[in-house]
Image 1 (cartoon, one colour):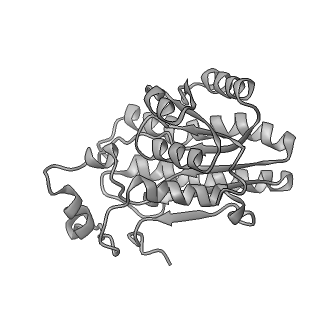
Image 2 (image 1 turned 120 degrees about the vertical axis):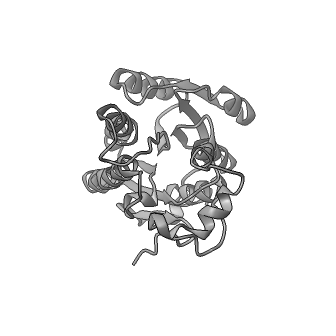
Length: 253
């Protein structure tokens, strides 16, 4: 999968930990020049990869524009963009606050829009580029007490389809990787005891949540490999698609 990745500048948001950090490692392993961007400190991962770390707040347009300008000044034209930055606020919709709802959308949807707008217009002018956004299978399957997160991921998936349609004429592809339960700090924050992983794999009928048919949690590398595939020339005729990487948990038709 190195073809289409090697030698390109890849900007990864949410790269300080979890899936974002693993995406950065995987793209670097395919010989991309990786820029790691996060509101948290991505320097340790960048040092590991001999790459550049940048601070960005995807909730702020000026911060996003400054990031993109700095990456292109320091490293060259961005050829790959991977949006991973995301937040989770849990709670039933009838009890969720306005602040919780807005906070989730401001990162998971509006943040993706801001970064895609800044990078996408440059890719369109150059008539080259690939954008992959890490979403969630919750964007297509209802989840108890995760309405804001699920709705933000559903909106973002359709945002990416529309962006992919608009940029297709310029040769820019836009796709989504939709993980299911993945062994990250965000996933572990939902567990109430030491048997959280087993409970997720088993499922919870009381919450109308099926388990994972493949019988295991995803690891961040599983998601990163799917991102690398969609970023590579092996997927050169794939755009406006959502790829579930969830061990079959969505039971997608």
